[in-house]
Length: 251
Ligand code: SF4
Image 1 (cartoon, rainbow, N blue to C red):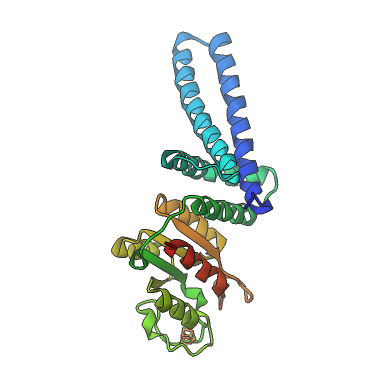
Image 2 (cartoon, protein in one colour):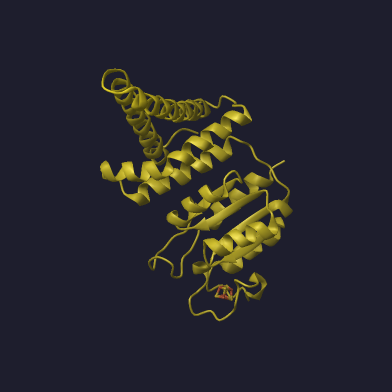
């Protein structure tokens, strides 16, 4: 596997963030020793130490990502540093994207791809009972009257939407499955079920915020398809969901 274009957007912005941090440290360093009083010097030195620490984490994270591309095994603590650098810089990278006229959607897609890639190289394996398949309510046919978000087994598998097939998949692999109407309910289900890994289906915005919030819990993100617009009769590629389940359950 290599760093495809999608992932490169996020990694490229992470590099740009690192360059900005470097310039900032240099600028503050210059102010500290050439244009300041003793009092402001102390503040500047604290700031430099903080920014240099951030730059160090990012540098290690980026280096780890590049090593991962070449399938060089990384220590778990290094993998944590990669996650930390990606998570800390996420809000800044969204802002940076605006400067470079890169849409939020594109950055979020790239972030999800990178997240999934970093999960793959961690070789996480869980028991079926510890795997949770989290589905968005918008996958349900809008005129279906069965209340599947309280209990998915209320679905009659009529074939008018993908919920029935996703239930079949969950039954086949004996993994837990929940339909949620938003982030608050998703958090509640996670707290209640205590999964060790999650496969989440949602739009890019909800997926990226969910992945960040759930960290360090591994979340494999699968974007839904929205042929009728957002939040309405959405679909998902069943094959991708099955591959996700197989990935986490592999012995
Ligand atoms: S498969 Fe049919 S019964 Fe199940 S949620 Fe979709 S429309 Fe409703």
